[in-house]
Amino acid sequence: MLRKLLVVLLLFPTMLSLASPEKDFEQFVDYFKERFPNTPYEDYKNGVYSIDKSAREQWEAMEEFPPYELNVDRGEELFNTPFKNGNTYGSCFENDGIGVRQNYPYFDEKKGKVVTLEGALNECRVENGEKPLSYFKGKELAHVSAYMAYTSRGNKFNVQIPNTKEALEAYENGKRLYFTKKGQLNFSCADCHVYQTGTKLRADIPSPAIGHPTHFPVYRSGMGRLVTLHERFSGCLNRIRAKGLPGGSDELNNLEFFTTFMSNGLEVNGPGSRK
Image (cartoon, rainbow, N blue to C red):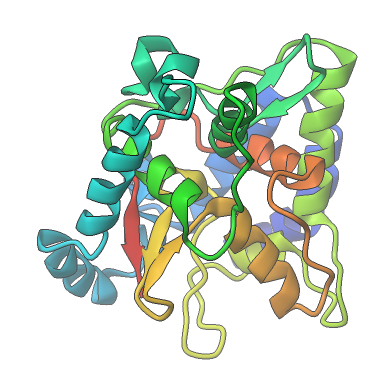
């Protein structure tokens, strides 16, 4: 069993590089099934608490009085506040923006790029004569995104990758960023969230790669505010002493595209709370 696992770990990036997105997903799921046989696939929406049973009870107790309630309320207020031209965020989305979180990200073939929810919110602002917002520091964009996620709870991700050169390149670029070692510490995303998940790195257990996007934006107790997925991506890059990337960049959009595809079939349960 141990020898087989080591072989899988060594070959995993190569296996993925030769596979279609659908085959990547199958191999990803099979890998984590073998790594954590007692964790049902649907439970990966809970991030590290799907595998860290000792911390799960504390987290579940915290979720009874979630620290992000006021953020969701503020997000709803902002979502419904008219722009200067009288339109609201809802005017830019199907179903007036309610229950649509699971539809993002997607590859827009007309624009030739990946569109995330936060990216669509900023596009909405620009189309209505407003300035785009920052992905960082837990401000308005994170609040509105959190509210939209809250209205989508229970809906399942089903990211589709069009069979076009541009869409497949975006997916492959996101996958490459995930598995490429970088920074002074020479780490990749996969080092923590594929190979080392379930083991302690310093005082923390890295969460599994499957399920990362489901619970974002996340209220991080240590920071006392909401954190968007792109802020978390960029923060991880900084922690390994690599250059952070701006929120909404093509690189982070593609990374979100890859990680969300690897979470297909899981329910939206954002916003979440983490320590």
